[in-house]
Image (cartoon, rainbow, N blue to C red; front, side, top):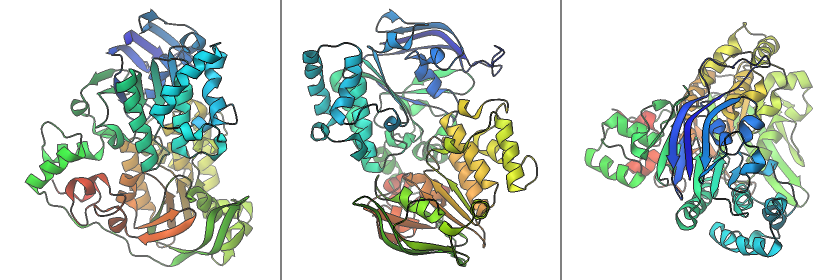
Length: 531
């Protein structure tokens, strides 16, 4: 279904010269069969999204750049063609599908693309039925798109991408903002589409632990321009993006490596490895006092009468399903978000009443849409502005950024960074401020495992008797590594306040991958395992 021959792609500067000496993709040769379910992975900024965009014509027609070699899809040479020449054959679902919806209701969104391709109504009706059944969205057809959960939005976007009979589906980080249930629904639907309907699926994803056991093969974009494809158990020699289950196998000398928790659990039981107790930090002084906080939107209570104290020297994770109120709570704590009632006191003053400069100094917020905080024309300008505003030594923000994303040409425009690199940049800018309250909303979205480990290290360094750190996240493995306390929300209400061992242990409703493998009390993260 997909054949690439000597595919080479480079981004170009305004003067026409390549942005980097090595092409983003360099002489790529590979084949993908009809109905094959492929995981596309690699370090942050390695070129995963770029590879997908060469398969739907967005690169170079939309992104700019220089492409050579051959792109052959379903036997047709589409090299250098316009995106509309790919549209009947290739469906594409972006990282944030809700930002690309163009209608108001589910059914209108699903048929929109097919209508633009001029398909007869009767044919559209025939094509809709099996897709709706596989994706299990029949009860959503007449719902407003704005009322859907993240997982429902993803499934609607997939239906819209395939209703015109597309044979290839490309997805960029489809589970990155989804809770466990939503991600499971989406992955189950994708596997059905590939194996029952013969759709060829390429899924770019950083949260590899969720999908590795479901796919047929793994395609790795290495970051040096090369791309390899093979069996899931053989493609993770680069520990920068290896999930915990692969890291564990390498640490304990398992050959071949396990890719399913069931196989890993059987090996663990035979070997009975040792592990150390997880270090939890004792709470320091009270930094934030949240009293009777409510957030409502119309008739919907996003946060209901919440009372919560947050302490110094701790990382507090807020977890819950999509729509449970995590983001609303974060913004309400920060002071700029919607509030219907209640107070959030910091040093005796409500964060909502702080002057702008005082709030920026005291409360650092990293939103889900991190790129919204980038406004200058080059990476160098953003790094310099951050140091100046935070009143820190020149190069402080650049060093933080390099630890999270590696060395990158600072002349590049921030909007030309990958999603993961943009997030790393905003993280570095906010970390440089050394604020008393640091709030992170889905901070690992778009980050590979190496960047997550670097972020975890930074958070450990930022922990202090004068600071509290709050993060809202679906990333169980990251929370298991960094959190001292886990707050669980359900329908806007706090339903649990636990240690990560209680919240993510093997007897919990949301066990970490290490907890599932080991079934050992007190083990939730790979950092605890002794080689």
